Image (tube, rainbow, N blue to C red; front, side):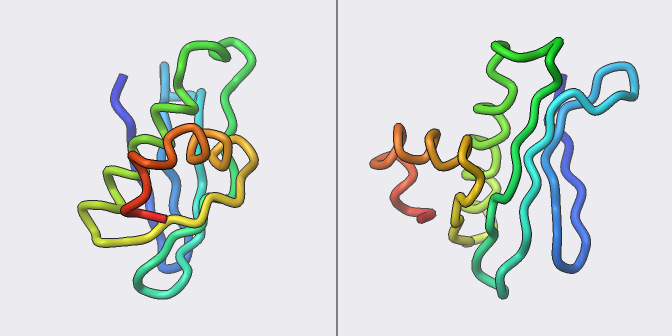
Length: 93
């Protein structure tokens, strides 16, 4: 399964799909040209515990690095992942 990405002028999402059904999603809002705000992460009940949410957060960090963006993790789940990886993510916070 590959992480997919969709984006509009002000919002975006990274997500996993299985059989054309979205099974995990992390959404964000653009805050200016240099920052995204992670506002929600959700994994379907059938796929909890598979590390999909964490993979989405890590992917958002890679994306931010590629685009020279900063991340503000307002989503409670993303905030915990950022706190646990504080040093590794320091360049994007």
